[in-house]
Amino acid sequence: MSHFSTRRTAMRYALLVAPLAVGLTSCGGDGGDPLAASPYDAAGDVSYSLADGGKVDPNKPLEITAKDDDRITDVTATDAAGRYVRGELSPDGIRWHSTAPLAAGAHYTVRVSTEDGAGRPGRETVGFDTKASDSLLRVTFGPDAGTYGVGQPVTAMLTVPVKDPAARAMVEQNLQVTASPEAAVGSWYWVDDRTLHYRPETFWPANAKIEVRSTLDGVRIKDSLHGGASKPLTLTTGDRVEAITDAGSHEMTFKRNGSVVRTIPVTTGKPGFSTRNGVKVVLGKESFVRMQSESIGIAAGSSEGYDLPVYWATRVTWSGEYVHAAPWSEGSQGVDNVSHGCTGMSTENAHWFFDQVRMGDVVQVVNSAGSTMTPFDNGFGDWNLNWSDWKKGSALGKAGKAAAVQNTAAPARLRPEV
Image (cartoon, rainbow, N blue to C red; front, side, top):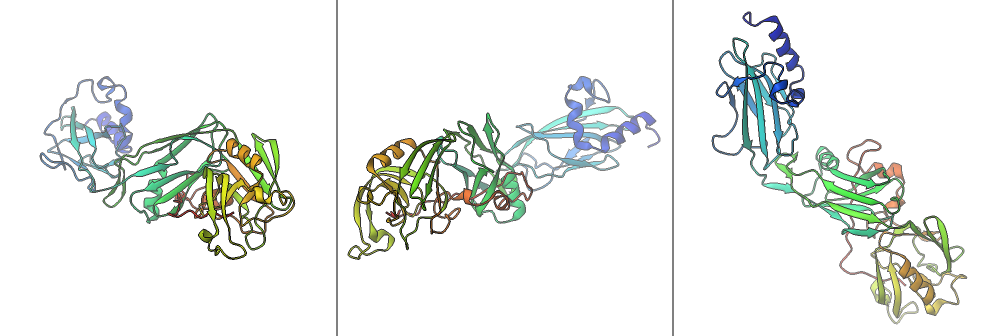
């Protein structure tokens, strides 16, 4: 190396300490090249681990090797989206190799800067394509685009199960949720190997825009599994609507944006059929539903049997808990709990409630003898996990990081509880 000048040698080793900060040297174009304004064409001075005329295996590193007396001084590899590939240059400048996985089914541009035995700088640019992955993980976000209440979790369903902790972390950090104009710190929770839920620490801001997207396309998740393209989702929230039923005082307090709008006399589940405590969200609305006791295992001819036409029914669990009109129990509303688990009220109040709420609005029950609503297997009980426990469901393992949680699908048969 005695034929190199001290200036060129110092410059080359300065470049070697951070080979992929090299993207910074190209921001000003060729005129900003630290070695020369017009580098020579270095074609043929370096070799690449690229298949002749074919596509590159994304599971193998890209390698670039200098020939003869040449040295590599700089390598910049980017995909079509402008994402850089991390890499490492050997101390002698002879070999560079990628240190991060390549994306599947992507086009890459590689710019190599060299220096020949006389210290003259060279430059070569090549392009190549990687093979598409045989296995792609795609994400379907939920719910459907639209306007929801502030209690609606975001869900992510994966086409491929993911069990490995590192692979889960890779998936999770590529599922992005933003809320505007007011930010909402939230986290994903892994409910199972294919399902995640996302919720903020507290409810979503009212009248917000929530945007959800995946950046997994082409990303290597584990072994030969890569991410595929997924459709983004945009939701909006309406007013902050909370309906809080006190089973002890037999009264519902209906609030909008923190202000009490109406108090409603109600009846909830009687002993043996106590209504679930905790936070639920509206799952759907049915202006009419026929409720039969056989659907929850009560014989029609028994003393607890029933077969009733029910109007203005707002569903809060998949197993059949509703807020609905119960004209047969008006004498007990505000006084006693006589239902089989639902929250019953007058026809006029049930119709009013039905018209006021939308999917995702918060319906909470307190002071019932029943158990607490479970988080994931009977609707959206996500809010019944405290924030500390919720964050434990994240694969990222750090407070404040996004976490993923499972979406709970409705069972094939929906069973009413009156």
